[in-house]
Length: 226
Ligand code: DX5
Ligand code: ZN
View (cartoon, rainbow, N blue to C red):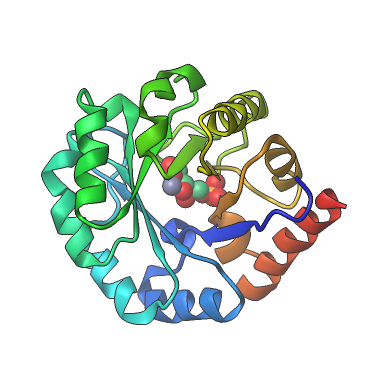
């Protein structure tokens, strides 16, 4: 896997919302590859965060892609709203989509990259029939709902399985890891085959600031790729 480009997606869930624009601009200037936006509805997950208005606000500042993670029940109701707000990647949860194939097709139809997220209990094999229509798989490495949780190490097996399935399907699929990514855990996810690394606390709450948090992650990833 040496030489494969890795992308870091700071999650604004851990940002200072009173200065959101500045914080997004700072992450971008420090070399973030995309901005991860966690949408939670208090129903699919036990927390409420932000919606299309925040995506729209971030889109005014960001020139890098917006990676929108919908942790909401029946996400098909809001796909157009998020696409119109500026989402580039639009990820829904397999556990929230009884008609996942239709939902992913609808995302592509709106001009966004279709993504599907798996909670820790959902197996890699559940995606077998949609690999052909998915551009991004988000392997949740925590149970979704909150930032600052610990990386579930057993998820690396699932990342490996999905990387193999994607290769067998003959197409490139981004595998994103989300939750508990730090300079101590990024290497394991990278070695397993992940390509996009979402990180909230360790970037926005880094003791020396956003740029240092991002640099520490890149260094840890580079050390691991050698
Ligand atoms: C969790 C969210 C994550 C979260 C990650 O439900 O999907 O994107 O922001 O935060 P950290 O990096 O703090 O675990
Ligand atoms: Zn997320």
